[in-house]
Amino acid sequence: MNKALIYIGVLSLLFSCNQNLSDSSELDETEELKYGIFPQTLPEVKPEFKLSRALERLYDNYPATKPQNNELFSQFKYTDIKGFDYNNHDGTISRRDPSKVIFYNGKYYVWYTYRNTPLPPQGAEKSSDVIPSADWDLGEIWYATSTDGFNWEEQGVAIKRPEKPVVGWRAVTTADILKWKGKYYLYYQGFMEASGKRGDDCPVAVSYADSPDGPWTPYNQIVIPNGGEGAWDQYSIHDPYPLVHNGKIYLYYKSDFGEKGDWIRMQGLATADNPLGPFTKHPLNPVISSGHETSLFPFKDGIAALVYKDGNEHNTVQFAQDGVNFEIASITEMMPYAAAPFVPDAFDDTKDGRGITWGMAHFIALGGKGKFHSKLTRFDCDLSLDLHDPEMKEPRVNYTPEDYFKRSLSNKQKERIEKSTAAYTEN
Image 1 (cartoon, rainbow, N blue to C red):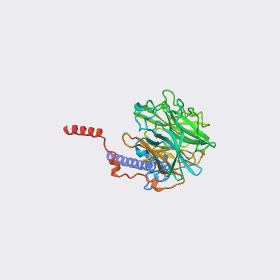
Image 2: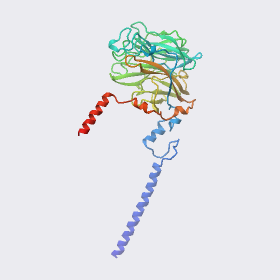
Image 3: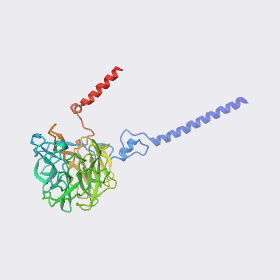
Image 4: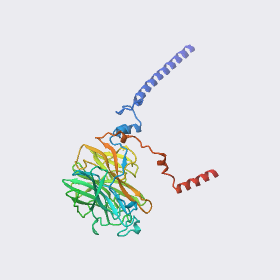
């Protein structure tokens, strides 16, 4: 009888184990459906099973799953343009910070900071009424025209430095262009002291004209002031960049803040119904957390931004449907310094922005020690809904070993490594 009970107990135990195994198998099948197996062919549509955070971003954050299909991804190529003299690159002539390019009466137009001084920049302490402290100090706004975007003809000064104490008496720099109701407006930084003495005091000023060729009438008032005490833009407002969006003027700008030598750079936005103001700074400023220059363009029903240099999100192209809340749309490399694209629909208030394919930029720190200056260049890209250039959509740039070796260790780094190595080998 005891044996029978034992036998029944063993059968019950075996049945219970089989039942548990069956339940476990069903759970595994449920989990398999929940997690899925990611297929060998990359799906264009987001799978319905559970994904890692990386793949969630791939489908939720980017316009396409591959850079080759992403309309807001591009590599950039550069061409040395003709028509500008730099005095044998001795540092006395500099051209930098171009405006966006526009097309008018059969020609392309671009405005830029032009400096022509007896000496190259000498620093704030050695600067004077004729000696610049920085590359842009004592600058004026000049312009040039072209029929093909490669060969340019300099037309001369557009905005002269006004007499002291009018805003911009020390330098007028970094202009950008707006067309509004048949008139043209140039916005620019107006310096009231030599750059480098304290925070680059340069609020935004504006001049207006009936034609891109001028003559330009200065408004002689600040249209976008520096921020109040303690604000992120208290000491500088750089790179005013106007577009027309949602029936208003959207003027983006950059500010440097933080501690000298460890600046943080972000982008802000001010809007207005009139080119002469008043402009209202957006309550969510800064609206872009990175980037050194400010460069944007209409794209589809929103605005795209080239976010080059500085900050966690440098070397990205970003997009905001509302022009305010930007998200990363692509990550790229070798982006243009001070990108100033040709934006045909910059002032159309379009809800179908077509993007950009080329523009102007600058290279800085030319000439070597004691001859510091900048020069203009052309860049090309494919950030356009109307172009498909596979060469521009290559996912990476192929660098030569020489390109890498140009970024060699400094003497200070070599000394640190030698000391560290010596200490390690002694132990």
